[in-house]
Image: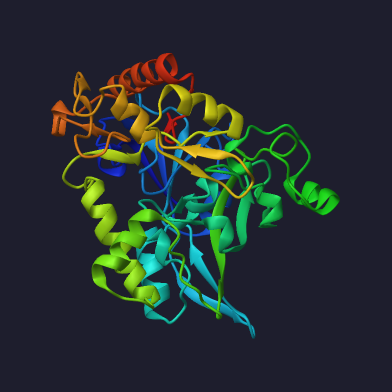
Length: 366
């Protein structure tokens, strides 16, 4: 177990915010977590935050809880059935590299999720998704460590309580019994009854990829790219390449401009609510969902409120995509977490006043 004191975090968050961790543990194997829990005084409080690729956090100051920097690596095929390939990846693997590797191995199915920043361990927490595919559509199971006792446990898809950018890992615990007992007793985890935020650390993720692969081309951007390329029957590699092209054209590279990707979730409303908004805002971009709800384009609403290209301090709204907040500073003159939060709240207020919609941020605020 490698423990760093007063560790700088600027290089570990894609916003590039300057901050330090009082204790940073480099987790390179599940045993490192158990060793941490067994070592007083570090493990006594169980006060832990988990850091993957740092692409979904806003740090507002130095971090007092112990930071687990997830560096568990490994990618492998663990099972092959008549219908599926099941692959397992370590929580520290870069997600985009997992997608590229799976295609190179002949396991299609993740191509729509290309270039999503972050690590594999964070993917189930956020239930990442893009261009018509969510992680839950390809998920098999995961392994995790219970921070209350150091025990290993596994969860299937139903036990993760996946939702839109949501999972059981984003809800506060409401039970005190060991997680292994809860899983055996209920079989299904519910956010209200078995929240795992701050209580469990994901170590490995398994994905179930169908051999009977079919392209997912339902999103307009992909349809346009298909027409542009003139390919009637695209391969998984074609879709991967198109998604990478689309995302690079829309989103800034964190290595060039600090950011955390899409900052707000696209809100979902009822059909009646959508009709009411359309009556006032006929041009609002919206998408019907399979459950009958309507997804509204948060970026369009932010743009309509005049925020594109605007800034507060060194926190700005990206001039090519209003859904992205960016760091206008650099190095020691970097944006602060407080500036990012202030800008985000100002945007929320504008959107609520005009549309009656409360935007929900995607990143976690530390």
